[in-house]
Image 1 (spheres, rainbow, N blue to C red):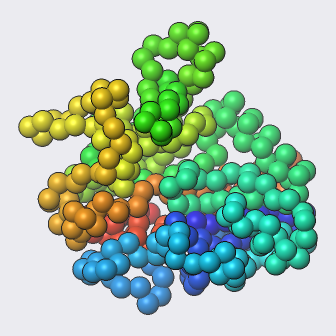
Image 2 (cartoon, helix red, strand yellow; image 1 turned 90 degrees about the vertical axis):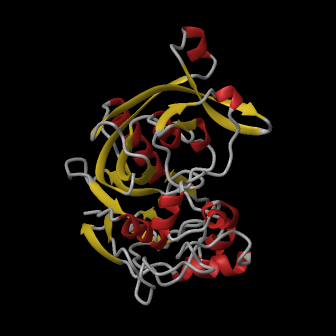
Length: 336
């Protein structure tokens, strides 16, 4: 995950790996706008990493750190060490649970930090935090205006189990959150009424474009134009192409004699994603390792307003995690 914190004089950039922070991301940051924008240029494989085609052994998902492998103090140290660019007054970035500690370690005292934009809970990618309320407000207004104008500001990369029927298009679905067996799940709603909309059903929209295909999988670029929890995972499941590593919504896609279909939501409980033997072989994973496969959904690019009203938008880019890059190479998928 790539973390950017807007400050009065510019952006402060921190690096993160999906599921946890790590040192040595091997990412270059260059200023792209006077005092405001920073673009992180991707390097898909850090130095010293093993080749993606190597047998995974005990570490099938390189670059992935899971909770419980470090203390709060170590996490703060890693975050502080991950700063690769800093302009203006000190700003801060962090996982929510250690925001106060990181703030103090960076000399911000009790100054509050807000999450302005972030990828989903299990997704990797950009996280945008701000310690300046005016900057945060300006960014939120930009995002709101862009949504109303149907202009995407976020671009995700996803690897899907299955290939969409069309190479690009839009996905529209009415979705709602339901508490099922102690878990909040996204449920599609057919032909929602006005009452449904009043009770929390939301019409959602995403653009998609297939970038590459191979081994029965696809590399897909996704741009959500609405905001809803797990929107992209739910949308791809509705396309019968669940995201690789989606251990929640992939169970809704069934297969009989090679033909895929949607299973009834009410009778389908979340479960570990099941991959066929051929795909497991291409990924060099055992079934037990595949049960721990991380979600291959990455917030790759964010469009932000320029430093001045007439300036063009700024793009922030986050490189793909090592395990994501390894999967692409195993499947023969090429990302430009």
